[in-house]
Image (cartoon, rainbow, N blue to C red; front, side, top):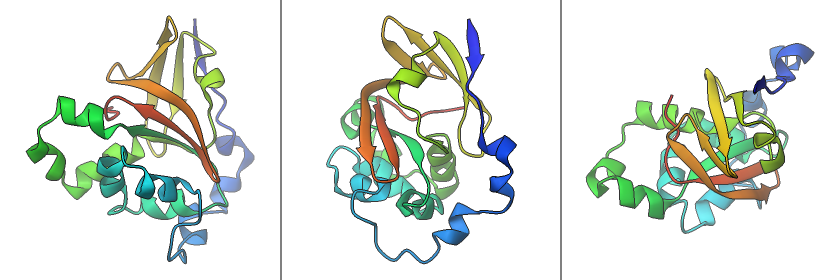
Length: 167
């Protein structure tokens, strides 16, 4: 069975009037326990943090006025899959795409992600990504497996993956 999780922001029209990037423009440091604060302090999120901090997504992941689900690849897992040269030379345009493919603009916990064996979720400014669950193992677009769930933040939730999410 395939299901599509409801996309509330597309039907309530608030997205037409309220831009998170504009509202969060004046943030000069990361609020305590925000998604960006957690990324900047967690020792296993340094690669992803270094990608995000150079993009405009840093603003919205710092802003506590909005909630997001963030899929963060583990440094340990990435270093096992990719060369140090590749990881240290990711260009900004690719960093933007990798970041965008890792954000859902609402909180989606493990229970919702695993509520169907196959589901489509709209990630930030992206096409729908396929989420599949088999025997309690959840993968996104057949390239990233969720390895740790539901790490809470002040403005959302973090799920740790074993890879970047590619579309």
